[in-house]
Length: 137
Image (cartoon, rainbow, N blue to C red; front, side, top):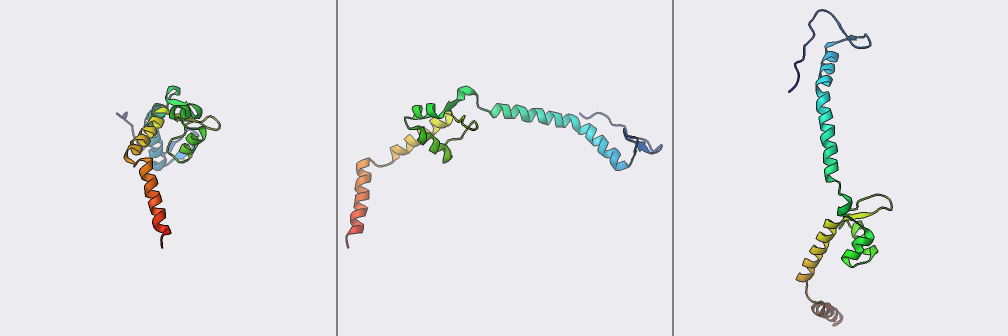
């Protein structure tokens, strides 16, 4: 709850810390700054706490090499997934990490999609069928 603010009485001109005469606009600005300062500090603290809460911990992250081992793919494939925005990059410079949960979600989605596709023989027959149809006049 805001503290009670006393409004200067109209006894005469008000002066700031430097001794300059303050107009009503300056007085209102000073009062608002004084009242809003605690709120700005609270907002800064809450913003910093929220940023810390969303930052993954070291246990949640895997290096590109670890991610490649988990997914049974090459390091280049993991880097390609990052470039394609399939995995979110954490870290900077040469320190490149991915969230384990994101990697597992990507692998799970790829596994689910693979189950809905036709078998390799069916895909080959469909591709060859298209090529044969194109080559016949």
